[in-house]
Length: 420
Image 1 (cartoon, rainbow, N blue to C red):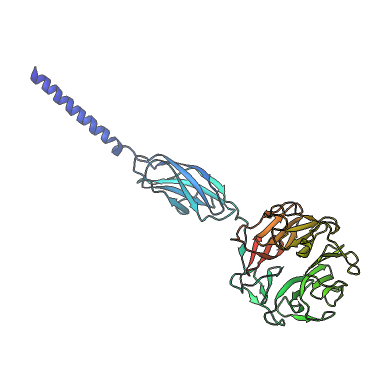
Image 2 (cartoon, rainbow, N blue to C red):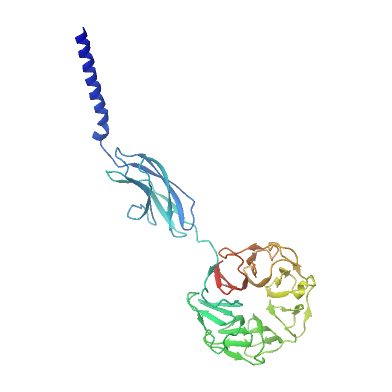
């Protein structure tokens, strides 16, 4: 009886051992395949990066040696295109960053997994990267760091006038040269305008003009003395108006000759085709008869603020006045009355932004100020910061809009540009 029981137990043990060996050999003897992988969603898409996910549901009965994400601007991306590898070597989910992608571009993405059999790819998904954020970038770095008051853009040529003269870039700001031919060295430049094919430069020593794209300049003394400080020039077709230290001067022939405009002083000037507006140190003056008669137009301007006026610009419907420490005054009735509009500047009446210049496009107005650039889409009723790309308080001194780009000249010297 005992021998029989002993033999039975011995046979059972052998069966169990063989059964266990059979199970251990299942994985090694079964057919191996590539892994099973799927591609997940795309998240956190920016202009230069995005996150993509993948998931491995089966390793194909062979250890995972690599897993990751591949992508391309064409369909069916593989490891022959861009790819990033995850640190994990197991089944399950993973998420990886796709870096250094191109802005505003459609990409095709697949997860992948590799074992000893080969590489498998998941389903394809696509996404489009974001556009590059619109922000200010410097284009005048390395030039003398003095305040840029004169700005002009003609096609791909940029003119920047500062305390040392006129700098010109003929390749949209990549290379700059000092083009002072005919202008005495270290002559401060206050204003630059284009009239037909001629460029006029208002300087601390008279009005200069160039007929060859800014390479050479001649002093204009036809009706001018040649030693005026020419602060601003307003253009209305072939009719020009200049605000100078010796008063307002008017030209009816694109600046070839000038005559006195019956108003002394003037630090900024603008026209909307109907009236001329001139800022002086005692307020703003306007003429509706082309400079024959002038009248003070300070209704609504604080008595202190009218002595702190600095800049003026005019559209067909709205006149904007920039002040020193009083923000902006706006008139919608050709200067008959003014309203203080500082909402968004910060501070309070008499203790807010200094506005040095304006630029307008498509009923939108931009204001150059100590804290940077502000923008208003509702005739100055509210203002918002337009400073992405600037650091600190840049102190913007001048503005110019050409096509779909705005340019800003800084008090500290550089010129910046930004897409609109």
